[in-house]
Amino acid sequence: MTLATVERADILSGLIDAEQDRFRTSHPRSAKAWQDGNRHFLYGGPSHWMRRWAGGFPVYAEEASGAHIRDIDGREYIDFCLGDTGGMCGHAPDAVTEAALRQLTRGTTMMLPTEDSLWVGAELSRRFGPKYWTLTTSATDANRAAIRIARMITGRRKVLVFSGCYHGGVEEAHVEIRDGRVGLRNMIHPNGVDHEAVTRIVEFNDAAALEAALAHDDVACVLTEPLMTNFGMIPVASGFHRTLRDLTRRAGAVLVIDETHTLSCGPGGYTQANGLEPDIFVAGKAIAGGIPAGVFGLSQEIAERLWKLVPLVNPRVRQSAHLGFGGTLAGNALTVATMRAVLEKVLTPANYQHMIATATQLASKARELIETNRLPWHVTQIGARAEIMFMPQPPRSGADVIAGRQPDLETLLHAFYMNEGILVTPFHTMLLMCPATSLHDVERHTAVFAQFIDLLRKSRVI
Ligand SMILES: Cc1ncc(COP(=O)(O)O)c(C=O)c1O
Image (tube, rainbow, N blue to C red; front, side, top):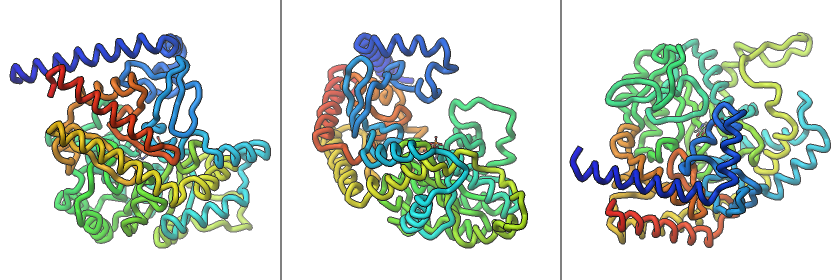
């Protein structure tokens, strides 16, 4: 490391300390709540993910409405995190609240379908392509089910994923390529599972490596996002989807497209907007307006192959076959009612138009600042989602992200944003719009991003 690099790292570390001090001082009630939470929760909060906020601890939410959150210290935030996409409908949207309240008074979980489910199934097929659908309680669960089905119908064991991927608590996807070696995804602790036995991994956009990995004829499915969103945004190279589809067909591997995040692209996700042909389509998070839910849909061909193994219901056989996925709460009446409200009234073409226009404005203002200040950074936008990355060019693969990422700068930006009343998802600098996000919110973001650049300039980091 050069002296300049060491000096820059020291300056950044001092700036992070200063922002975290400012955060602690201005959030006394959240600081105290976090201390108390650590007495009873394994990792401080009801979910371990809540410990990852750059201020050093999370703010405790008092109330959230639309694109805004107020915390227990009485501070207001513009929420561009939106529950890391689970809140993409905005907080407490009327249609979802009304549907939930109506269903709460009529029963939530009965192991029986409601008529709303008929509307939901037809709408899912209309949006994402004709499929046979199943509801789950999360996107993780939907991915696990997709993998299980792929293994059942192919009789193969391995799941192929791209380095830098994240698909939830899916063991097979907890891998990455780092320094040319396959290992466990950054910071995941080994757990006795032989990942090499169940996984193949290649770099995103690398058609030759994909072809070679599929040539072993042992891959049950390729599990991928249409473009990668969980390691910073990695855009998909032109033609890669065509190649991926051709190669998976030729190799007899099932293609699972996970649109949990890319649902932000439009009413039919990236799949509909770009004519993808997944064998299994997965989504989750925002699909029921923040009520836990996932969905997966099988193409006609994959459904028929599954029905050969596990036939459709025979009314004369009392005990139906156990499929090895799903749960008692999946497809419950409350989830179905809120999913209907989302698909009918919230994630509508008009709302997407607004969300995408808002994201376009945010991205273009951030780009202007980057260009005016001649900074080696870039902004990627896909639909209602924009991301500022501290690299000159969009990465083509996980390797590019590992080589170019500046974690300290990201931590500083996140802590600074929190102190200035802006929330972004803690794991990357993704800014997501909901139907309630306004141009006023975008203007505030532009002003705070400009202040951040000023801070770096005054501190000689840039
Ligand atoms: C692409 C993708 N798939 C699946 C998941 C898992 O979602 P959940 O944690 O709601 O199960 C995530 C979560 O971030 C995701 O980004």
